[in-house]
Structures are given as C-alpha cells and as structure tokens.
Length: 169
Image (cartoon, rainbow, N blue to C red; front, side, top):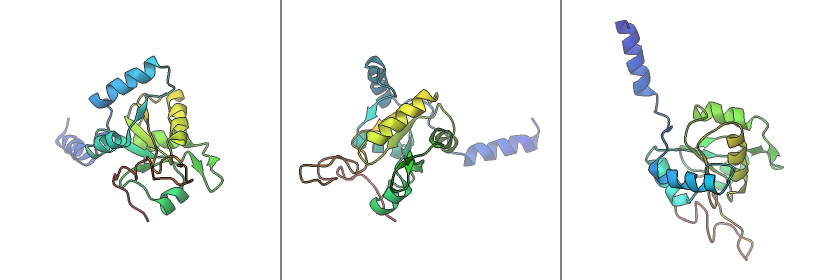
C-alpha cells in the first residue's frame, strides 16, 4: 500500500464512526428470547436500556415517527430519522427499508427503533427483519407511551415519562 493510500485509509477510519455491528451483551438474551418466542424481529428493549446502549455508542437509535411528530412533540438528540409513515394521515413510507439501510449503513448494524408508543416501531422492525436486517429491536413504550385512563400520553410510560434526554424544535 502506498503512503498516500495508507494515509487516506487512516484518515477515513479516524473520521468515520464505527457502526455498532457487534451485538451488545445486554441485547443477546433479549434476541435469544425473541427468537425462541417466534417474535418477528430481534426483540423489545426498555427505554432506559435503550438510552444506556445508545449513549455508550453500542447501538443506533432510529426514530420512525413522522416529521410532524418529531417537530411538535420532540425527539432524542442524535437519533437517526427514517419515517415509517409520513404526513398527518401517516401514509406508509414505501421507501422505508431502503432509507433505513442507507441511513444506518447496512443490514447487520444493531439498531433500536422508536415511535410514539412502540406499535409502529414494532411493525417497522418486523418489515426490516423480513427484508434481511439481522439486529433490529423495538423500543418498548415508545417516545410518549400509551394513552392512560384520562386519555393522555406520557403519564404512565414512554421515553419522556422515564426522564430520558429529548429536545424539541
């Protein structure tokens, strides 16, 4: 290898973040349980564990909510955005799998998908797994959580309920 090629390789590896392709130990048992239960994706991850792994750069966090949800409700800083559905009518994004692969850098990257309550991200995780992704997990409870008895979100569970980092535009 020439000196120029060696330098270019060193610079590229120094500025390109390493993609989380090694399955963190914390997720191995979740994935094994999901496989034995016949779950259609790698499994569900609690919000606190999702934040821990994401903040330690062991996984990517992918927000699958619409642009409108991210703008008006908030989002996790530095998360990747690939909408599962778009617009106020939440029309299914036909390019979701291609966009996901492009934005996370491949089908073997360990990624956690997050939506409002954990339902759309589960559907997105299933679609990604069917398309050949190997380590796609769903963040349980979602960003806002389920609707409670008073018809409100964020009062019983969800990313924000647990006091995890988020920002709003």
